[in-house]
Picture 1 (cartoon, helix red, strand yellow):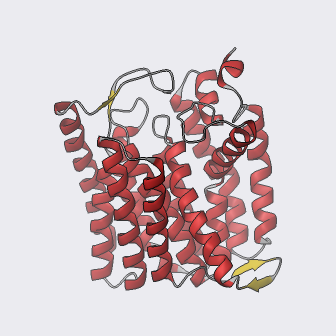
Picture 2 (cartoon, helix red, strand yellow):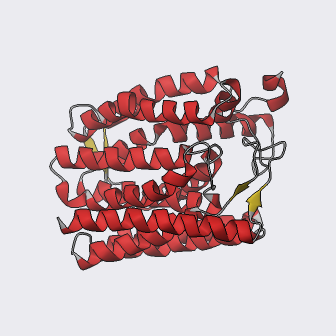
Length: 341
């Protein structure tokens, strides 16, 4: 019962902090002004993701006090998450060169991996394989890519918040059903922290998350997936499946832009979700569609993998094939002018 009161407190804290941040952003003119690369048409305050960071850090301290998480996971999440949030906050309020942001991101990844003891052995077609130092390199790249792709996918109202809530609640339910109830608490607390912000970010958004929030969320979700792998190797793949809508859209778009020779660090509107929002002239429809995909398609596959009824890599392939089809259908990564014409 204590946990559920704490979860409610985290939600309320996030809700109230977002309200304060919105008033602060309006007073200080911290406003996102629509431009040719924007997916929104109304000037909107930004930086509300700081409420997620602050409330979730408080939640972690509560869980530690209740002995509901390990100290290693606490330090991994706190150190890496706060570093990424600080970098994002500084970039929101000014500009940090991409190379220095990337360096900071890899330092955060290395910090998290040092506390998690690196990448856990993973399941590949029935065999548990330890990738050793090579696995740790892959894990660092994975962490950095996840935090950046989450930033890329935070482009329309409510999308990044809804994805995080679906992934966290979905993973926690699978943990519970698979007999790993001891690790449900952290993702539920993150869902509560995001939900308080989501109230203000639901379409039409009254405040945006900003880089401090989106990068923080992407990294924390990735760290949770790596931490879960130490409890049960298949749980890493559960997270990869649950976050499939973001992973496929962002990765497919990046690959197409790289092949075409585009400057990948330049802002653009060529993700599938951005094309879809313009096609349907609605952020809400796209956000709701992603929630439906998570609930109806990705969660059942994740559950089968979590219960070890389905080979993890086959589960990922099954989950991703329709998502790749949708990315192609909505022209993810294609030239924007040509697609808009």
